[in-house]
Length: 185
Image (cartoon, rainbow, N blue to C red; front, side, top):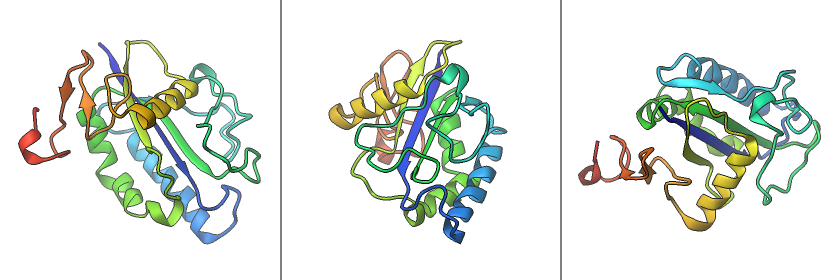
């Protein structure tokens, strides 16, 4: 059975190493979000660095998830002191589970505060795609799909919650997203 891959990417207003209360608050909220997400029905796994050192993204060992990668338009730093981004890569059983996890609980609270922490870039901040059972998506896959989404819009290859596709490539809507008359599920 196919699984749903989700890549998220955002450019932070301040580097991860910034000692201000707002950055610390982002870290604390992130820990709560990750803990709750990992317990959510439908969650399978997420990319985690084997060393687990916050702020070390580019040099970290990500195991089967591959070398850490970011979109070419990201122009901030790549060192521990200058990195100003947040990215996730995860696997889900289906769109409904991912939707519920993203739009409820601590993640919903974080979404409500996103403009406190993140810049508005004019680029999509998330992308989904289907992978075969047993396949672990890589960071490069996520970047490639996000770039495709930015240039071509939603398609079975790379899509959003609002314009989503089944694993067979058929357009679908998840209940709670999009116009009420468009719900197919």
